[in-house]
Amino acid sequence: MVQPVANRPHVLSLAAFFLLAIILTAVVVGYLSWYKWVTVFVDGHPHEIVTTASKVDDVLSGMNVQLLSQDYVFPPGEQPLSRGMGIVVIKAQPYIVNYEGNTTEVWSVGSKVSDILADAGVEYYNHDLVVPGAETTADATNPISVIRVESELVEEKIILPYATRHIPNYSMYRGQQRLRYPGRDGVIINTIEMVYHDGQVAERNVVDSREIVSKRDREIEVGTISSITRGNYSIRLEKVLDVVATGYCPGTPGSGCPIDEHGHSQCTGRYNTGRTADGTRAIEGSGTLNDPYIVAVDPRVIPMGSLLWLEFPRGRVTTRHGTIIRDGFAIAADVGGAIKENRIDVLFDSHNVAWSFGRRQVRVFVVEDVEQR
Image (cartoon, rainbow, N blue to C red):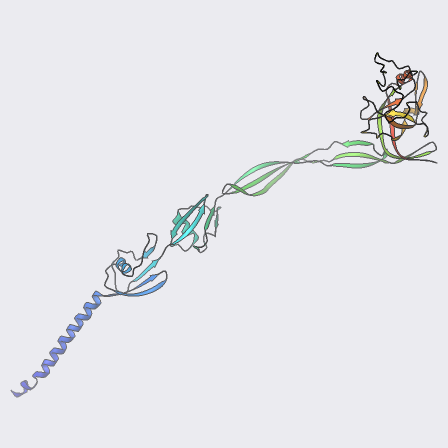
């Protein structure tokens, strides 16, 4: 009977221990069920949180994380919180997007340019230009541009103007010219790809070229003979002209030229003073170097004062008056209202002789220098 009484304190100790263990266990279980450990990643930065919150939103609110509608949160804010949960928050950034003449600000959490454009609702095609490239990492400090690219094929007619080539002719005199070929412009049709960036021409690429008409240059033969020998004279030439010659008289008394009621002659009009335009006495010459024929010229073709050599077919002009003029020297000393371009007027003392001279072809050599051999 003594033995049970002696073990009684020991039994009480064991009971107290077990009771304490039960209480501690209950406290631990309650604590673990009430408090939760979670990790919140905000833009990649981790935050260890012990919380009694029940939802994701409650955790973020307790951390004073200000959210925009464009921010990314995972798991969603309404999801119940569980122990050891990881929460990811990516804050949206503002990007500038340029397209079709518009500038738009868009907030996005995308990592690539294509993500930003998708959030901005901007569609683009493979041939459009995206700057920076659609697959590159987006940078909020640099604007994103979408350039609309379009193209079309057009035909363009190109005229290739012909040039003029001068071909020496060693059987013609200096100053003489003869047309060998009139010349023909070339024609090319180019097919051009026109590339437009946002409606403006950015490139012109020739994709095809067809020659419709071949170009051919104009060809003119030019004389090269620069000197002639006539009698005892060696004559160096400036140029040679084939002209039409007519005859006239000075219109002075004794020339036989008809005079009107105003005293004007038929040949020289009111200039029947016996002098030429440069003041030379209007007297028929003999065609020698010292006594040349006097001719009226167009100064735009033959300068006044030029020494000339006249050469007629068969070397002379013969009329019913006989031989009235032979090849010889002449001086450009007069002008006339009817003497234009390649035409000259030869002075004769007699109106009848001048009239019988008529219209003649004559070759005029404009003399640069003359030497007696």
